[in-house]
Length: 186
Image 1 (tube, rainbow, N blue to C red):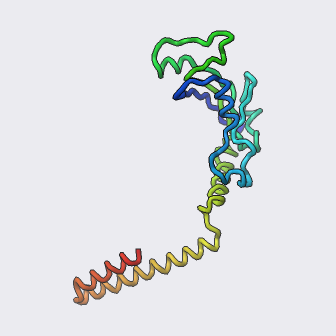
Image 2 (image 1 turned 90 degrees about the vertical axis):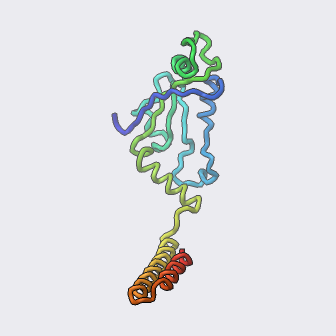
Image 3 (image 1 turned 60 degrees about the horizontal axis):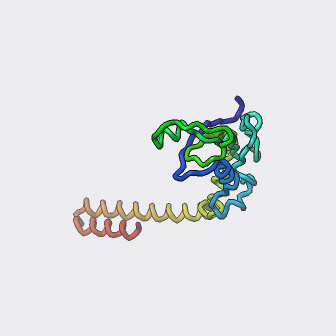
């Protein structure tokens, strides 16, 4: 297999839903971050639902959305999981009743493990952090770093001076002065 992760997923919902509702919820999913639309590398759709019975497949679907879209397919009721989690007998899906409300579903999920699994998700996270103002520009980081360094050196110099005073007999007053300076600096 080349650069694709496939997961066979089973899940149990809090309430009953039809398979068509599960598909619609996945297909319409949009990240909650209001910054998402302005992220340069973000795909148009983070999730895509495929209707074909043999999809997703890594070789055919891993490059969806330049490798940043996760493809979901083969969404169907999971009567075995429903029985295991909720108790009771396994109730098979009757022919013609495939869209009946159920609590447990299974599906196949595929993503590009190099693009979305490593490099791409790192890029998306960095772009999102920048959009949210969490990352600093180089100038901001250097300015904060310089200020932090100056404060740390100042605390160190005060501690060293207090230790010298303590050794020279200034005693408890010097220790209290150094502790107060540390608390003030922090």
